[in-house]
Image 1 (cartoon, rainbow, N blue to C red):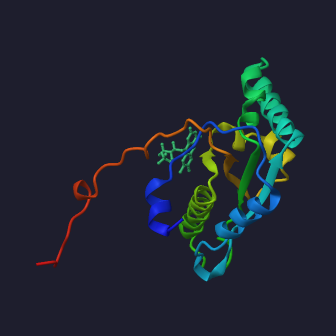
Image 2: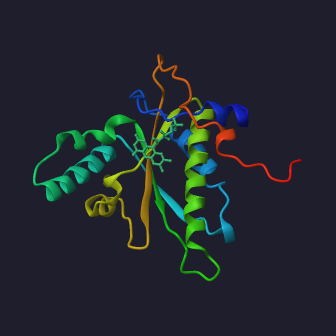
Length: 186
Ligand SMILES: Cc1cc2nc3c(=O)[nH]c(=O)nc-3n(C[C@H](O)[C@H](O)[C@H](O)COP(=O)(O)O)c2cc1C
């Protein structure tokens, strides 16, 4: 798929089939991800890629956290990681402690990495979307995924094959002319 076509036709795909894309295809997505630019080449990221029962472990950790916080067992949460056959956990490790490294630039870079993964998935005919929220902040989940104190979970990218009848158009955007000032263009 040509670059502009991929960018202009990508959209978040919340519902995907149960079939698991092959591991080498997921590797390609990760390789596309790490081509994102990073100032000082800090590459402030790593991945934990879940499939099969590893997703259930995520659901169990998430549910355990909800039980701790709410005092009850939210079964709906336990099943959420099963919404896609593959979950790429993007773990951010900002190198802001190093000289010259600017914290916000590390977060920009992680966003670029995630967009690269979404675009690569779309180009491969896969459906993907980023999911964030409380799950990635819970200690139970961080511990399960081995996230250290100087790291955070930037997002879970859910990946699978889109459903055959999913022909939704790209999500709407504010027109560029509404948000752009042109200066010095004559
Ligand atoms: C950092 C980030 C976090 C997101 N987290 C969620 C999420 O937790 N749940 C969700 O339904 N969508 C999430 N999304 C997807 C956005 O809702 C989606 O990108 C937006 O509605 C635009 O739609 P599009 O991706 O189809 O263009 C997230 C997107 C980004 C960039």
